[in-house]
Length: 342
Image 1 (cartoon, helix red, strand yellow):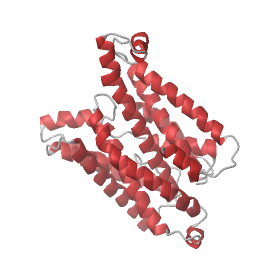
Image 2 (tube, one colour; image 1 turned 90 degrees about the horizontal axis):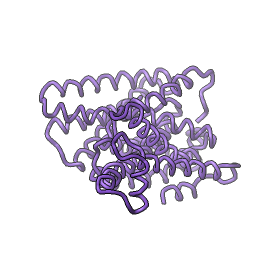
Image 3 (cartoon, one colour; image 1 turned 45 degrees about the vertical axis):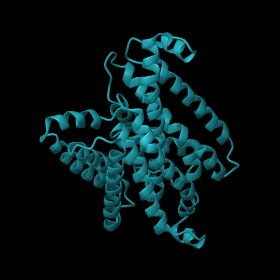
C-alpha cells in the first residue's frame, strides 16, 4: 500500500519508470525466494522448496518457517527503512554522501541500544524506542554541527564530521563491553549487524513506528521536491523548509532507529540504494523514494544470502557484505568531478 501511495505522488511521464519498478519488483521476488531456499545448514534448496509447496519434513519446515521466513521479512523491513532514510537524508542535505551509517545516525542508535542492553533492557519495544531516540540525537547533533560550521556544501567534510561522531560513539559502545561479560556477549552478538538469530517479535514491535515514518514520508515527498529548486521557491509554493527539515530528522530517526534495533548497525545501504535509484529514475525525490522500496530490500536480501553461502557452514556478518558493495560507490562519488544533482 505504501508503494502504491508513493506511486500516486510520483510525477508521471518519465519513460520506462513503471517498467523499471516492475523489473526491480521481479528481482526482489527472486531474492525473497533465494532467501527462503538457500542457507548454510543441512536444509538445501530441494527440501526448502518442498516445504514451500506444502510438503517437506519436520526439520525443513522448522528451518524455513521459523528461521529463514522471519529473517527474510526482517531483511525486507530493514532494507526499506535504510533505503528510504538515506534518500531523505541526501535530499534534505543536498549531499549525495549523506548516509545514516556515515553521518553517525546509526552509531547513535547503536550506542543507545548497547546502553539499554547493558542496563538490562530486554523488551523489544523498549529497545526500539531507545534506538530511535539515539538515532534522533545522532542525526540532530551531526546536522547541527554541519549547519553551524557551514559544512553542508562540502560532501567530504560532512563525512569527516560524521566519521568523527561515529568514532566517538563507537568508542563509548566498546567501553560498555568492559564492564559486564554477560552484557558484553549480548552486545557483541547484536552490534555486528546481522539478520541471523533475530526474532519475529522485533518486527512486530517496530511496525507501528515504521508505519508512522512511511506515512510522514508521503507528506514530505512534495515539499522536498520543491526544496530541490531552492528554499525561496519552496517557501513561495507554501512550504516551510525549517519544518520540513525537522520532519525529515524525525522520520530518519524512526527508520534508522528501528532498523538498527532489530538488525544492528548496517552501513552503506542508505548510500547505495538512493544512488542507484537516482541513476535509474533521475534526481526527483518522489521517483527516488518509489524505487527505494524494492531496491532497499533487494540489496539487503542479496547481501544476506551471500553472507550465508560464501563461508558455509559459517556466516559472514551482513555489514561486511554491504560495506563491500557500498565502499566502491562511496569512492566513486567522492572522486567524481561533479557530484550528482539532488
